[in-house]
View: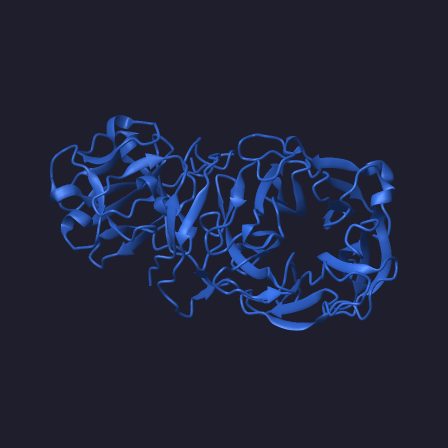
Length: 514
C-alpha cells in the first residue's frame, strides 16, 4: 500500500544538490494508513530524554535515558536512576528497570545523558552528573559497568570534571573505539572535545584533549559510515517546553579528530551560536525540539536515529513541564549526508524497522515517457537553474530528458534530472491541482518525493508525497512543450508513464549518484 505520510510545506530551497540550507516545516501531520508495516511516533512516554541505544547479540535493543529532576533541591527525588527500556523490533518498547541501585557517591545530584556500549566483554555506561541545587558545583562524567544490559551497573566514579580542564560543560559523553584505542567525545555549549581514555576507561590522557566543534553544541553522537566519521550534535534550547529550539546538525570528516565540516563546507568549530548551521533534523508543528539521540542499524542495513522530542498532541507532563518522549526515525543517506525522518523533521508514521523496505523499480537513469503523447519528461531548454520548468518533448538525446530515480525508503523516491542535478519538485509545496512542476536543488521535502505506483499494465503513475497528486500532461496535450502539472488521479493515459531504463551509474566519491 502506498502511503501519503506527510503534508510538508516548503519554506526555502537554496544551494546545490546535497548542500542546501533549506528549512522545512510541517503545517500538519496526519497518518493516512495504519497497517502492520508501519509504526507511529512518539514511542514511549511520559519522560525519556537523551536516549542512548545498543543492541545485544540476541538482537534485542536496549535504550537508556535521563529521568532527572532539575528542581529537586537538596532532598531526595523520585527520579529513576537511568531508566532502561528494551525492544525486539526497535519501535515497541517496554520498561525494564533502573541502571543503578543507588546514586553514585562522588557528588550528590541527578544522573543524566547516559551513553551505553559493549566493550571488552562489559556493558559500559558513561553518564553525566550534575550537583544539586542546579549549577551549585562541578559538572562531570562518570563510568559504570555491568555484565548484563539490565544491570545493576557498578559505579567507578568520575572520569573528568569541570575542574580538570580550562573549559566547562563537562557532560554528554559519547564513547568511540578506533583501532583498539578508546576515546570519549563530550561537551555542552562550551565546545565539543575528544580525548583518549586509559585502557580500563576509568581515566583520560590529558595530553590528548582537543576541540572538534564550537560552543553551539552538546549531545554528541559519532558514527562511522563508509570513508567518513559523522558527528551528530544537538544545538538550540532543549528544555523550554514547546518553545524549545533543539535540533540536530551534522559534520563529517575522514579523520576521527576532524576537522568536521557541515554540508555547506563550514567547519563545526566555527559555530558558536545556537541553530546557526544546517539542520538534518528539526521540529515541526506537532513535534518540537527533536535532538540528543543515538544511532543504530537494523537487520536490513537501514540506520535509525533514536532521539527525544515533545508532542503537542499527547501532552504528558513531569512536574508541570511537558515531557520529552522517545522517537525513532529512519536515516536516509543522500549525497553522502544523513536526512532524518524523511524530510528532516520527526515523522508521525514510518515503515517499521527490519521490514523488507525496497522499491518496485531499481535505482538508475530512466527516460520517463508519457503514454498518451509518446513524449519524454524533460527540463525546458536544458535549464540548470532552480525553478526551471518541466515539460514534455520529443526524444532528442538530451541529458535533460534523463532522470536518476533513487529509492529513499518508505515507498518514496527522488527523481533527479541528469543534466541539471536538480530534483523534480512541486514549487512552494503547493497542493493546488494544476500546479506546474519545476526543478529545484534537493532539500528532502515532501514536495520533492514521489511514490511510483504500478498500474498493472506496464505503466506507472507518479504521485507527489506532499500533495497526493499525479504527474500529468496538461489537458492531455500531445504537443512538444506542453506543460507538466500535478492533478488528482483520473486513470487517463496522460497520467500514465513508462519508465525506460537506460543505465545504472555508480555513485561518485562526493556521494552523488553519477
